[in-house]
Image (cartoon, rainbow, N blue to C red; front, side, top):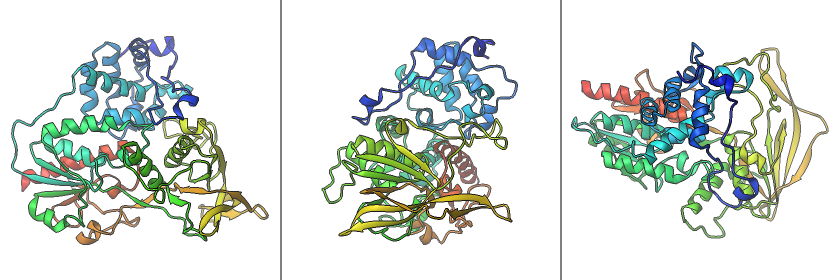
Length: 474
């Protein structure tokens, strides 16, 4: 372990963020980092807690105490190797993971958790700088071919492990660059896309084949993949957004959050949109409907586009500042989360339901809202009721619907394969990640529903191990 008294001697110290008045003028990453000396001290705070709840809470099962100890001892290469033993992309999770590990850290009882996520990012960046991370080209090939449909975190994890096992892996991506929501859903100010490109370059040297601008089910039929490959793995995400089918939904100015975020990321890559196609918050009153991370990303993007005002609403009640009696450590804290985007300027409101969008000449002008109460019914389920005489309107020219995702898109490949679905519309799989169609597997959000990037990575790795076992029996 690290310093046995480190958690007593040193307080938690975060890297912090760039000043608001500086960062809102660009799309550079907002987070700063500590120097090596401070980072080493932060690693020393990992205590001998007996049971590493951080490891239990981490979807990829990161061996956190072990690599923290390596950091404290200055063994950065070893720390990187331990990190990569359970996670193909610690440079991603070290930036954007909501760090359930820290919420379950024993020191979190006193709100002084180890800076696990920041330490993780420091380890992998040090490893890249020192040249510890190099292409690992498999010495032998099995002769088996695998098609991975979808280049997000789950698909990339599948590709990584199967390629290292010696199989020939081809990743099919419908966009012009791989990464999935890492690439086009998460803003650059949270994840610089050069970080993705760096890892993809390594994968290409290791032998993974990437085919972009290729929509399987349209450009290439699924049945063709069945003929050409020994196994097909679907990692297409849960990309069907939750809609709000109310009056005025078709007005110009009401957009899905992902359309808004994806377009800005494409602009940052140099793509040009005509005035008619461009979704801009500049000079507008913006309403973000949905209080999650995607909504927060819309807030940050709107601020950078110089919106006149930004308001974020949530239909649920405002979460408490501290854990409630029914939400004990080490479980995930259902508490109020304030992001860096919120700190840049945003009015937040809770317990509001959207009634209708109001327009003029086809363009959004206002939104009608009503306050709601939440109470438990006789069956124990929470029920929403509108509060009388609380309806009001807001002047709004741009709305982003940030209410999450409901399922994978069924049109195209899912329907072509006639795959069995679960009650929520996700691709149904067995314990080995096989779907109802022979030789076809599914992993990540497509099979489990929308979740965290780190969970997608974990599920991708688990699926890859099952696909490998299947191929070795074939």
